[in-house]
Amino acid sequence: MIKNILILFVITMIPAFELRASIPYGILSGRVDLPLGLHVEGMGMWWLSAFTICVAANAILGFILYPMIDKIMRLLSKIPLIGKAWNRFTSHAQKKVHPYVEKWGTLGIAIFVAIPLPGSGSYSGAVGAYLLGMSRKNFYVANTIGVFLAGVAVTAATIAGRGMFEIFF
Image (cartoon, rainbow, N blue to C red; front, side, top):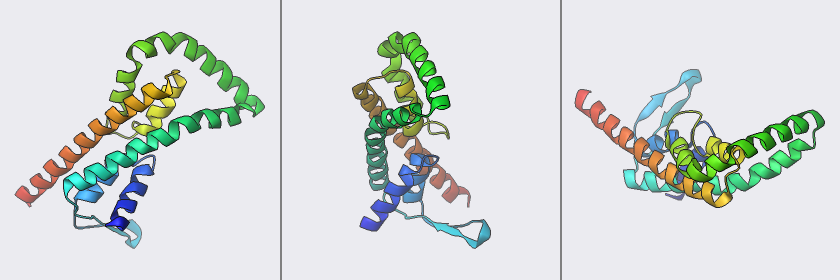
C-alpha cells in the first residue's frame, strides 16, 4: 500500500498530470498498451482511497510551490534582460489587478485550479496567484478548494466512465 501511495503522490506532482492522471490511475484497473512496447497497469484502488491520497498530495503541492515562486522570480530578476522585463511586468500587473484580486481573487483562483484540464491546476494557479499579487493565505484557501473540487470532478468522471465501459463492453 505504501508503494501505491508514493506512486500516486509522484504522479500528482507532475505538472501536466496532477489529479487528472493520478486519480484515474489509482481507481482503474487493467492494462493499457502504449507505444514503444510500454504499458500501464492501473492500481484498482477503492475510489475514496485514491481520491484522498491524490487530493492531499495536490493540496500539499500548492503549499510547497507558492513560497518557491517568489524565490525563483528573485533569482530570475538577477538576469539582466529577463529580470528587467519581469520586474516591470509584475509591478504594473500587480498595481492594476490587486484591488480586483482582493475582491474576487480567491474564488477566481479556486475555480481555475478546479478545472481538470491541461493548463490549469495547482502549478498554473500558483503562478497566476503570484502574478496577481494574491496573499499566501488566500492562495492556500483557493488552492485547497480548487484541488478538492477538481478531485471530485475527476473521481466522478472516472467512476462514471468505468461504469459506462462495463455496461457497453
